[in-house]
Amino acid sequence: MSGHGAPIPMTSSKCGALKGMAEVPGDKSISHRSLILGALAVGETRIFGLLEGDDVLDTARAMRAFGVEVTDHGGGEWSVNGVGVGGFAEPDQVIDCGNSGTGVRLIMGAMATSPITATFTGDASLNSRPMARITDPIVLFGAQSFGRKGGRLPMTIVGAVDPLPVSYTVPMPSAQVKSAVLLAGLNAPGKTVVIEREATRDHTERMLAGFGAEIEIENTDEGRVIRLTGQPELKPQTITVPRDPSSAAFPVCAALITEGSDVLVPNIGLNPTRAGLFTTLIEMGANLSFENERSEGGEPVADLRARFSPDMKGVEVPPARAASMIDEYPVLSVVAAFARGDTIMRGVRELRVKESDRIEAMATGLRANGVEVEDGPDWWIVTGKGPGHVPGGATCASHLDHRIAMSFMILGMGSEKPVSIDDGSPITTSFPVFESLMAGLGAQIRRSNP
Picture 1 (cartoon, rainbow, N blue to C red):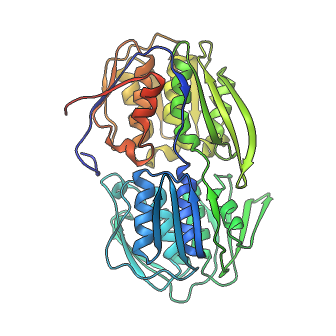
Picture 2 (picture 1 turned 180 degrees about the vertical axis):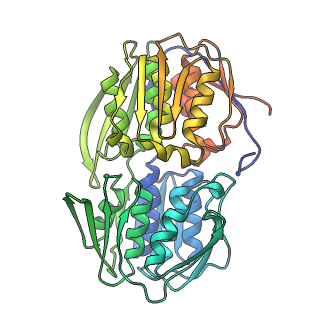
Picture 3 (picture 1 turned 90 degrees about the vertical axis):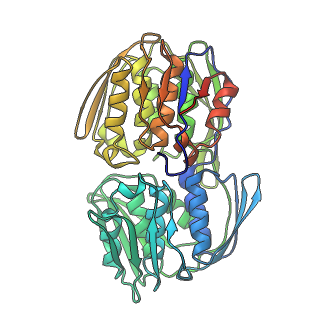
């Protein structure tokens, strides 16, 4: 059962060439951060191209609960009248973050150094995910946390009355943890220091600088060191959200495995901390090209063209690349099934604790559809069968995970027999127009009665 309503079973069937332009939604990571940093600025921030999926809408509702005026003007245009760093009011209701790990973790960080108390919950998937990775560092600032066994939601955070700056080494590659600590550091005096041994997506650092925070970044033998000076007055911004590379992955990968396809995805954000999938696909022999490369709002952007690529071969993905494509491994495993030879993915333990255990979910579904998969605690190997040779025919569990659901829908577009999922309703959390966009390109996805 989905946390957002009744299950929606779906089936994807082999289709002809996918053609046309895929106008994917705005970047989810940047959309979350735009709302939160806009709320912490003083004055009106205007946002254009905001992703209006459930995850981001839950973050907008959360900002309103903290006393921030957030207005939807229609067509992806929003405004946020910020209350300033340390200006959050105490919510009078539980904050429901739905399915969004990014939303809840960043919001916990943002409120942890204000003298207020807030209780957070989510859907069944989010309430099963680990939150100690956030509560451990925010306690160092002087906050307190009270949650379920294992550091699970529902959880109450009591913000620090007299916050202290911290120096924190992130124990795992996680942009969410890094960002939560930086957001907490905004309302602590002095300098908060975050050290990450492996670089992760840097949207928070870029956006903090854009809002006027004093932030320094240095690459050292210890790792990437980020120093943030606390208690700034953030200045409101006008933000145009690039289109989401994680959403673009689905029409791009569908085009690569579907004979005769030629799909253009415009205005894709190509931040190097997010573009690992495209690098990997090119190494596999994918026919990808980047057109009209430019910079928008400090983020590199281009139009991405993907064409059918029948000669792709399996590769070994460097573990160091995992942080730049962690959300794209499920759909990469689908492409790997249509390549020739083994695609080896290591250093991906983080996939075990996403919205679902994504390694287990994909491995089980791929095997059911006739693809050979081996997996371990932090690795998996998909043995490709080549284009046109994936049997398909099975129904896969989506585990309340939008990326698992969409990945299996892409699998069905190139398989011999249709591929089904038990519940496609979680897709709306990140890609509410997925079905209509793919249908516009020529995909055959239909809903069926539960």
